[in-house]
Image (cartoon, rainbow, N blue to C red; front, side, top):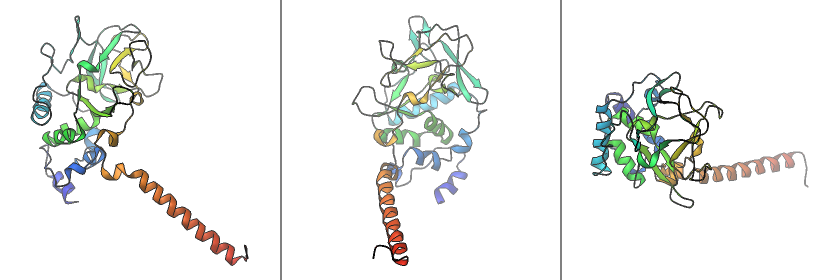
Amino acid sequence: SNLRSALGDLGDGPVPRPKNWKTWGYHGFRDNFRCHGYLSDRTKPLPTMEDWETMLKAYNQVVDPTYKFDPEIPPTQGYRLNEDGAQPYYAKLSPGKGRGLFASRDIQKGEIVHDGNKSDVVFPDGLSWKRYMFALPRTMACDQAEWTFTQKFKEGGPMRVVSSLNIAILMNEGNTILDVNVQPEDGNGKPSEYSAVFYAMRDIKKDEEILMDYADYDTDYAAAGIGHQVEQSKMEVVKTYVHHAAMGWGMIFRQVGSTLGLGS
């Protein structure tokens, strides 16, 4: 398309907003910002302080002018978890995975490893997330697309768009369920898709990678307001297809039956 051709010459500037930008969904942003090649590069360096400041400036401009970094701990190091200081992990490149998080000390089973309540940014609605994407340089928007997830914070509550503006968002997924060593839990030690507080599921050694299961949270972009109109009506398309397919097969069976002299 003309938009895709134009993006090829954009470099890393912000992507201009087309007239129909409000109808774009999550996958539309990834496609039209040409994120695939960039995101598939597992050797991308960690975001710098300047990168995080650029993301914060865009977030302040179009989402929340009052949001600030942790006053004591820079986003390149994370955030203040408790009175002891930062969360117990640091960021570095993970072989085969790209950017990831690693334990900065031995962590005991049952310890709080990450608290999204102190780290995450929750967008007020899908439109604010879309505005934010267009306010960022293209590759940073691609980063944010990769880091964006959806979550309900209570049973029956609305699905929200969530991300983060510090290294906490770099947590990778385990290759198998046996690799996973942290999970969101309620206050009673039970796994909870509504919680943003991650606990160690077992002892984690210093410098071991912190790994979660991305399936701990439901991914529903349409419910969170960032699904394309086409994505939101997929089920209707499927129903229509099945209906027409059934009609088609019915006509074939009737024709075959007529040819063979069946049913007469």
